[in-house]
Amino acid sequence: MSAAALALAAALPRDPDHDLVVVDIGIPVPAPLLTALADALPRGRRGVRLMFPGAGAEQAVAVGRWLAAHLLRTFLVPSDPSDPLISAAGAGGGTWIRIEPGRAPEWDVRGFPLPSDLATQEDWRPATPSSQAETLPVGVWLRPEWERFRLPERRAELERVLPRQSAAFVVVLGGAGQTELDLGSVARFWATLTPADRARARFAQYGPVNLPQGRDLGQALAGLLGEEVSCYNGFPVAPELGSGARTVLPGGQLGWCTFAQVFSSGPGTAPRLREHRAPVDGLEEVSPGAYRWSPQAFVEVVRAGLWVRPPVPPAHADEVRAVPLDPGSHVLLYEPALCEAALQLADRLEEPVRAVSRLVPVAWPEAPPVVPVGEPFWRHVGPDEAAPQPPEPAPGDEEPDLLWLSRLVDPSLYSAAEEPAAPVGVAVASDARTVGDEKTESGAAASGDGLFDVEALRSQPHHRGATIVTLTLTDEQRNIYRHGDVLTQQGLSYALTAPCATQDGDVDLVVWSVTGRLCAELETGAERVDGRVVFLPGTRFKVLGVAEPTPAVRGRIVLRELSVDRSATDGGAPADESALDRFVLLSLSRAADRWAREPAKERVPAAVAFQFEALPGFVE
View (tube, rainbow, N blue to C red):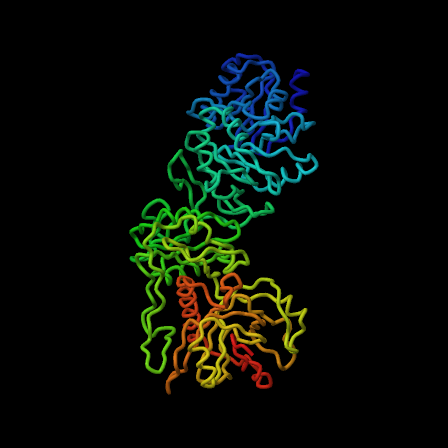
């Protein structure tokens, strides 16, 4: 074997996806030697990088085509076989010719060796003076110029996360925690690609990209490049890390596995779902991305997650499909009349997705949501009053406010940031239900009342969901709830995450909690309360309804906790929160049904039963 061939073989780094073969025979190869070469190649289905030191590209391609046709394997030959190592490294990509059985040869942009396999970083190809294009096993990484000491860590993470093999040419954009990547860098890189590489290119956003206001990545790229482009709805991952694509959190960590995985966008056209995965097993797909849940309900895969809708898409379908992806939360949108189907679907989601799911009702002005059939969950009844219907949505005679729609899907039920007033047109109700009847998260508390240490209360988690306490009210207390709108409490009050078998009274006080504290870590000894929720001083509650007791049935008072930003400065509630109210009523109704099916148990020891006489929302 010649010294040149030996030196080349010794210098090649390992290729995890292909067998490396250096052939030290003259070109053209006689027919008997071709057969011998085919017999000598490593067995298996992996692709083969075939190198002929000193041969021309056309001769190497001819040998590769013969071998591909006879062995039914993919072969790659260097575009400059005279020195494949230096040629591949120096160009940083696009330097190998891919030969597949039955197909014409084409460029393979995934360079080999990778720049990180070589001696210096100067071998990388600049896309612009402030950005770099670095080859990856399945594509290329366009990123801002970085401090060199941080590159190995980020590159190692990308190589760990990305699939090792892909029919697509993956273009990773940006870097987590870095400055924005300019779209001009993408356009300049795009101009260097062949039509074949553009056809199989898919963009994956890994860090911030400087996008025009109100446009997503696909729309911005399609408009800039003047042709259809495909973008991952998330980030492509290796099979052992998930099903196709996962979201990328702000720090670069992987989030949940998306259902809509690839969208294609053309200049001036709406994004088209190109690849997706089924919501759950066993559903019939009746059209691309739409599955039959029941005769009355379809489940459609959308950018934000899933959408439970009627079989015929409603007029606002495009607005719902455009709700943006939330990296931290899967959003399960549903038409209000199909709330029960959405809850059933949520129960069947795979656990990692279910754990980060939020149910968000879609409200629109033409048709208000249907109230559950049967005994109303609440009714506001005075001495001479008839039970009114649940609050209607605000009348809408304007066009849908799409900007408001896109802003409303938020990771938390309430946020401290200012939110817009209720919409006039199409809206996704901002009161989002966390899947599961409870969710906890750390938060700050106010002061205590001697039962708990103040600092300990500050460290306790929030309870987001239904709470209940059973007691007997005085006429004065009942009148405060009956005629109140928003009530503010000054002291602490207590409720439970489920009914207590030993609590007695003529009224169930049911409260939708947002910031109530769970105090399990602080409960000790024989006076330990199971499922105590503490509402802190200054908490505001909106009265949603009062059902008077009868000789046979306990009454019910329904409250919804308000966050600071949802309370008016004069102490009143915002004028139009009907979508939030309806959603809370539906969620509390579901909780009440669950409580009715489960046997109640003793939760409050007799010695501390008096603590639950303090009523939420009372000014003391």
